Image 1 (spheres, rainbow, N blue to C red):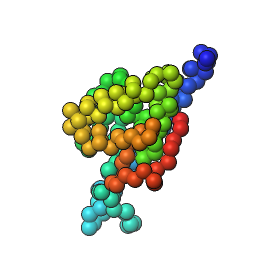
Image 2 (cartoon, helix red, strand yellow):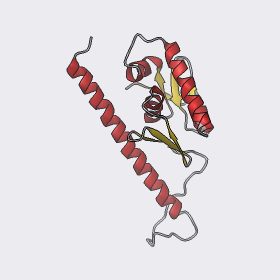
Image 3 (spheres, one colour):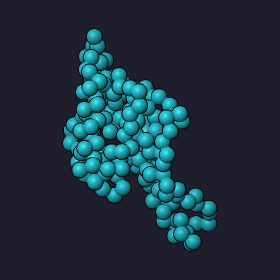
Amino acid sequence: MTTEPDRRLDVLCRQLTENIMGAALCAQEIASIVREACSGDGCSCGREHAHPRRDRSVPGRPLLDEATLSVVWNGRLLHLGHTQGFWLLARLARSANQYVTHLDLLQEIWDDEFTDTAVLRAGVRRLRTKLRHGGMGDLADAIVGHHGRYMLSLNSAPSHTEVTASAH
């Protein structure tokens, strides 16, 4: 049984993690925009330096906005609302290309270690359906499950042998 201070600390840790993830995603997007602007024959930034070209075969991470409870993916915006689907996608995006166990997801999203994994599988199905209806079928397909774990696979060719498990 967890105490109230433990629950509050857990919530604050989750919020901090989400904010750090959001800042990292923003920094990644800024770097992507700079690379895009500088990827032509002549650099538009006016500085003399080499810019790495962006590999277009690897998609970026989805941008999750806690303020609007929306996801942005490949130029599309989808409002998911304050749903378990939004928090599930946020958790998987935080550990993209790493498996997260059912138990960790149930504890973090449903806040109940005794909830059946069928509830999690149903939540993943609903999230995939929402994403597909919102024109984000490729993002829905990137949510993969394997032997009691889920991951948001953003690799161009996902492989079960090259990923690691992630807890909290």
